[in-house]
Length: 181
Image (cartoon, rainbow, N blue to C red; front, side, top):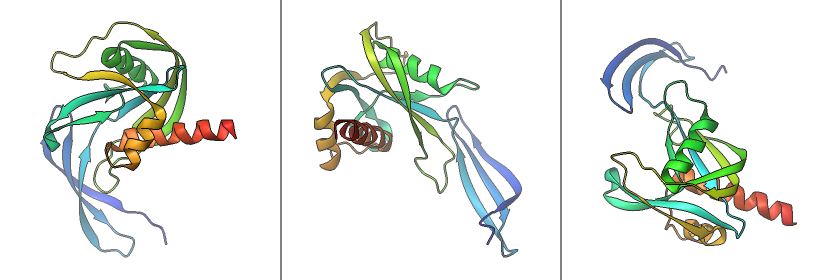
């Protein structure tokens, strides 16, 4: 098996400010064709900013698709051609008002692999210093530190449902437990 699909054609259904939607015709490995709907997103970043006391910064903001306030790690969309690490630094300072002296990649998250091509770059930031929060004009959120252990408890209790937050928090939790053991 090749486990591959070859795009034969692409139709643009929608071009938006954040996403584009395409309808592709593909050839399957058995020679038949199929339709694939693909949401293109430029990608994003998320940051687990860990304080020396073991607390990490989270943000709470209203998320329109779910019509509720969700708890998430600071995050944002990549601008065209933007380096993910630079975007992470920008988002942390914008949303939380914090800078960091040490950055470590936590890898990449593919949040919805069946129909979205978004890649989220995850980072651990340490050596934190206060700066000044400067939210975008249309951005409203509250930032606060929460103990990492409490974030893990909230994830396991289904109180934090955001995928990027779950992945980054649990990766850092496992990483720290491994260092202790």
